[in-house]
Image 1: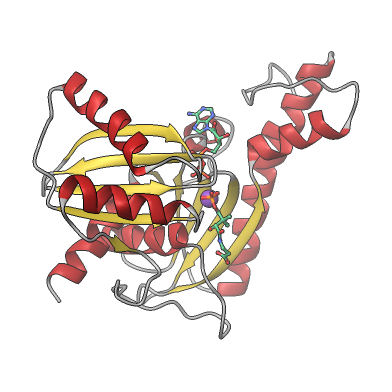
Image 2: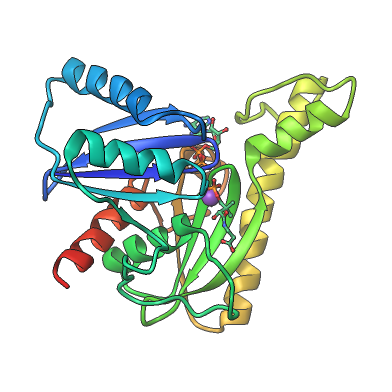
Length: 256
Ligand SMILES: Nc1ncnc2c1ncn2[C@@H]1O[C@H](COP(=O)(O)OP(=O)(O)O)[C@@H](O)[C@H]1O
Ligand SMILES: CC(C)(COP(=O)(O)O)[C@@H](O)C(=O)NCCC(=O)O
Ligand SMILES: [K+]
C-alpha cells in the first residue's frame, strides 16, 4: 500500500491509500528537526489505535519545507524498506510539466494540487488552497500548472496583527456575527473573514479576465468550507485534493 505524505509549512499529513480509498489521515505539526524514529513512534501508535497496521510498500512525499525531506526519506527507508518518490525531484515525473519562468521552483504542493484537480476536473481551473499561505494555482486546458497567486494565509494574517499591534489579542478565525464589529475580537475576525472572502472573489475575477476562458474554481485546505459559508466562492470543495494528487503522481510514475 501507498503512504502519501504532504508536508506543508504548518502541518504534515500522512494518508494510507489502498488503491481505491484512503484508510486514514494522520496529522502532525511540521517540524524540521523531527527524526525518522520520532515519525515512526507517532505513526505506529496511531495505526495501531485505528487497527490499520497494513504493509506499506511505497511512499510519496510532497514537502514545501525542504529540510524535512531528509528525515522522511530515512523514515521510509528504515521502516518500510523503500525509496520514496519526492515531488519536484528529477526522478519524479509530473503528468504535465509546469509552464513558468525558467529557473522557477514551483511549490510541490501546487504541482500536486494541479495534478489532482486536473485528474478530477480536466483543465481551465483555479485551485484555491488555504494553507500557511493562501494560494491560487491556475491549471491550463492541457493540465499544466501555468502560474497563480501567493497571498498570506488566514492564520498568518491574524498572527501578524497580534504580533505587530500591542492591543490586539490572539484570535481564531471564525464567522463574525456582523461585518461591523462592536468589540476588538469581532473587528479582527470580520477583517479577516470578510477580507479573505473579498480577496478570493477579487483574485478569481481578475484571473478569469486575464485567462479569458471559463474556469472552474476548486477550494481546498481546512478553512475552505468556513469561507464558502460566507459567499459562493467555489464550484467544488475537495479537502483530499492534495492527497489525491499524490496518488495520481505516484500512479503516473509507477506506470512509467
Ligand atoms: N479546519 C480548520 N479550522 C481552523 N483552522 C484550520 C483548519 N484547518 C487548518 N487550519 C489552520 O490553517 C493553517 C494552515 O493549515 P494547513 O492547511 O495545515 O497548512 P499547511 O498545508 O501550509 O501546513 C494552520 O494555521 C491551521 O491550524
Ligand atoms: C506558496 C507556498 C509557501 C505554500 O505553502 P503552504 O501554504 O502549503 O505551506 C509553497 O507552495 C511554496 O513554498 N512555494 C514556492 C514558490 C512558488 O510556488 O512559486
Ligand atoms: K497553500
